[in-house]
Image (cartoon, rainbow, N blue to C red; front, side):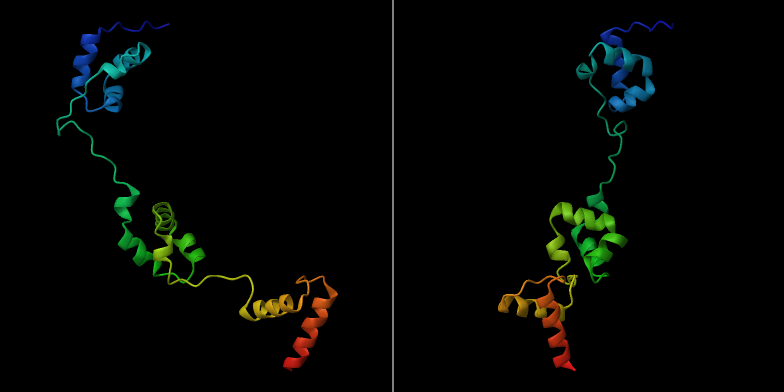
Length: 150
């Protein structure tokens, strides 16, 4: 078994000053990082915060999809399901930020039933019939109404 080198806290601090953060320290000086982690010394280290050493932060989803761009993307679609399918990142961010109601206001809402079917069901409920396809009274009512139209 390979013996790990012994490091002093002073040596580890000097090495850490050359790095921008713990990730950089881990990549550059692996054995020193492992020793510091094993002996719980990582929180005591100070990393170099000079601009030349600091890693650039990753650009977030909010950077690529601000409100105006999400709104323009949503205008390309007529319903939410297409928006979700073809532009899921913009939809997901809009949902996370609470923008959905504003950017999808122009979209048509999909309904399970046609407007005609909904009106028929409202008529049935008004006269007190059970709105179920298995209900014989409902079938008879639909047949009479259908025959009246022709």
